Length: 222
Image (cartoon, rainbow, N blue to C red; front, side, top):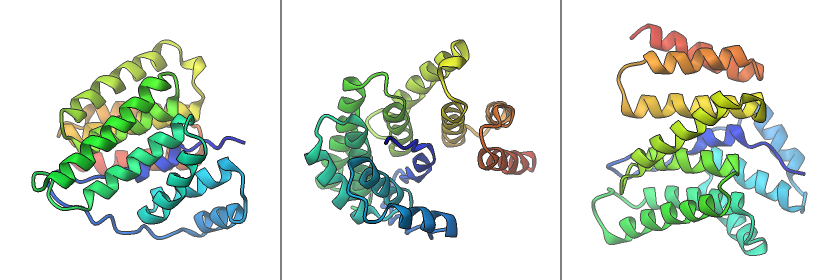
């Protein structure tokens, strides 16, 4: 069984220019119940989902332990490789200021390169695309944010042209990624409002509509 890990993408947060401690996010009751439902499962997809949940909540070492096992077990699974590389970017992010230390620079370069390789190997994998865009945007090194912007523009163009090929939840994930990228690169919220209104119109699930409405409310105060 393959899970749909769109919400896990919100755990991709890296702070440019300085070290990042990535404080662990508290587990909500529903998150904890979901995690407990997966515990004890030994199939590949269930273990990958546990790793993604750990990644989302910044249990970075726990995610790394599982992902390293899964990558070894199935080296041809590009989604797993992309999640592993994104988590390695978080590990690199804990090592101090971006511009201080070859160890950090080499770690960031390696994780971005690994994500790029996964994307090139699975160019039509939507999850891999979003992992790359989110991570590249947040890291913002070696021109990664510009690459993320270009990749996102191409993805949104495909969605606009052939929306029937993308599930509403997938479209929401892309638009929410666009909102996050706009917040990183621009102080003008106008484009973000457009994306948020599309999310509301899609009405893929109550949670995404609620997030969009709350974000719109915050933008209205600017």
